[in-house]
Every structure is written in C-alpha cells, then in structure tokens.
Image (cartoon, rainbow, N blue to C red; front, side, top):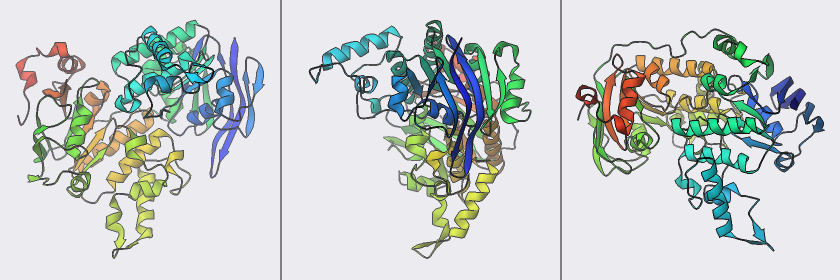
Length: 509
C-alpha cells in the first residue's frame, strides 16, 4: 500500500534545475532505495521531504493527503524523520540533549535531567547502542554520531524515515546494528527511504528502487530482486563500468616518505613505515585502530610526543600544517564538513585556498585570471557538478565537495606526499572511478599516496601495499599479491594477532 508519493516534483536553484518531473511511490512496511550519482538530485528531494526546501512544481502526498512543508517543524509534525549524510548535531551538548532536543521531559517548565538520562540510556540499550547518555557529542567518533542520528529518528516514532548514506562512517559492527534497526522499522510498517552508494547494502535491505540522473528519474524498479547490479550501475552513471578501481601497476621509485618511531595520543606504540615515489599505501583497521590519529600526527595537525617525518630524506623540522604543506605533504581529512571545506566560500576559492601563495602579484595582490583558470581546470578534470566556479561549496553534494578538496591539493605546484582519509565516503560509483583515476595519475607522476579507508575492497583494489593497524599500533604489512580479505582481517581483528610472523614484518621498523 502506497504511503508516501511524489508527483511531478520540480525544483530550481539559481543557475541549475535540481529536480524535474520526479514521480514515484514508497509503500508502508517497505524499504525503498534512492540511487544516483552525487549531484543527481537525491539529497534535494530528501530536503523537500524534510521541509528544508519547498518544491517549485508538483505535490507530495502522505497517506493520501497532499502536504506542503514550510519548514522542518512541519515535516517532523507529519511523522517524517531525515538522517542526513552531513550530520545535524550540537557538538557541545550531551548525547541526551541532542537526542531529546525540543522534547526534553519537563514538569511545569523544569527539566528533570535524571529522568532524561535514564530514558535515553534505556532507549539506547534497547537498540544495541552502547554510548553514555552524558557524553559530549564532540568526544564521539563520526561513526558514533551517525548512530545517534539514526536513534533520534527511532525515538521520535516517525512514520517515514529517510536515511542518506547511513553507513558511510560506521564500522562493520555498527552497520550490522543499523541493518537490524532498518529491518525492525520495516516490520513495524514504517516507510523507509534508503540512499546509499554501497549496492551490496541496497540489495540486502531494499525492496524497490528509483534511480536519478541529472535531476531526472531514469529508472523505477518495483521489484529490486529482479534487477542486476550491472543494470543499476548503468542507469546511475549512463555508461558501463567493468572495474571501478581500474588499478594500474607502476614502476616505484626511491623512498619519498619516511615515518620513524612516531608517537602520540591514541597510539599505543611508536609507528614506523615508508612510502615510495609512485606508491599507493593503503591503511586499514577497525574503528579505533588509530589510523586517522596517525595521519594527523604525520600531517602536523597533532603534535607528536616523539619520532620524525622525512620527505625525500629531509626531516620536516617544525611541526604544523603550514610546514607540512610547504614540504609537499598534504592531507584530505575524513570529516570534509568540519575539517575540509570552507562552507561560506565559493568552489573556486576552496580550490585555490592553499595554492594562492603561488598566484600573488607582490605582497597584497592576487592574479584572479590564474585562480579562475586553476578552478576551471579542476572542475573539468574531476567532473565537479556545479553551475559555476562562483557557487558556494556548501550547496554542492558531499561527493562534489570531496572532489573540490582533492582539487585543492592537485593544484599544489610541489606535491610530493598526499594523505587521503576515507576519500570516497558517501560517493557514488562513477565518482569513485574518477577519484581512483586521479589518484593513479598522481602516483604516475611520482607522488607517494597514503590512503586510509574502512572499505576493505577499496584498500585491496587500489593499494600497492597494505598496512594494517589494530588498537593503536601497526601490526603488519602485506604487499598487493599477499593481501586478501582474509589475511588483512586476520591482522585487523584483536584475535588475529597470532598471524604468521612473515605477515607481521613491518617495513622500516
């Protein structure tokens, strides 16, 4: 039975038609996948459902009644809950305060914090989430914050739940909890919209699917089990992609990056490893393994308590991001919203923000013509979907924001080492293919690339060598020929620490 229906929905923003003639239905007690490339219009439609945007054309109906939401409050009151890819939370409030924001239990206007804490602790335990209700949000990992956003929708007893890339920051264990939640919501008769670029998840959870491309519906699949993976990919990207990774073997040069006995917060032992010119070294580990913390130490975002970093044999003498960038070492962070983009600036400004020092005329003036050419070159090269270089980056989809961050470092004139942390988080299969191609192109030019990813197929598909971390230390290195899902996971799991000694040899230790 159809519970949610979109009828000929259209939406126009300055310079771009985001949605055109979108019509489909979502049944009660079903999970409906919304698929398409970054910038295809999926998030815009979800924001219309959530009351953040008002459609310029068409009608939205819930349980047979036409609805028009002027704001998010209207949407919530109608039983809709949206879990956005870019999370919505207040970092300086507690877990309890974030989950009950606007719904704090009170008597005569006075809030009972003890009652609220007990309520949230009980609800979190009931769905299998082990996070203290009194913990500040800023102290939690991105994965834990993502779980709490999903819990928020469940606690509000919403009738319609839309999840936009819900597992993009989750560990395997957290993803399993999410899948149980989604199946429970389905069994309770909820209408669930599920947006994901991970097709294995889509086929495992979803009953039906609608595919978007360039703001239009290009495919409707009422029975998803009757559709092949290849057909969905072809509908999404408009072309066949036989091998999304497109690995290209290269001749590796001398050691370019050398990390020696680097020690710091959240590392249980000093870490040493190296990367050669043209080499892609993949770092894998479970949540809490210390991968991101290690990369921040290498980049200078955190001050190490010991050890050193050398590039082409020269030690980076001073610790700090400016010194790293001047040495040719750059970093694409995991959390692009908080640490990657400057949301109030344009696409062009975000691309040029680091290499601007090369565009100066004297001390005070910047060559705008060079900045425009640089921005246009990388918008075209990485196929960034934006109406113009002057568009605010905050209006772009998450995947296109990621491409802008990568463009920023591609524009550097003396790039020698690139660290990318979760480079394809929440990115569609077509954009992944383009980002991998850009990484291989950079490696061909002699750049040493360190890639951190929680997606094991991605690590195995792109890397020349895999470094495995567990509980704050490097526990093994495997070359491409020896790396398999089984051998990597055996090292990554604490129980797998008894792996063969040959697997656990650490280069440079």
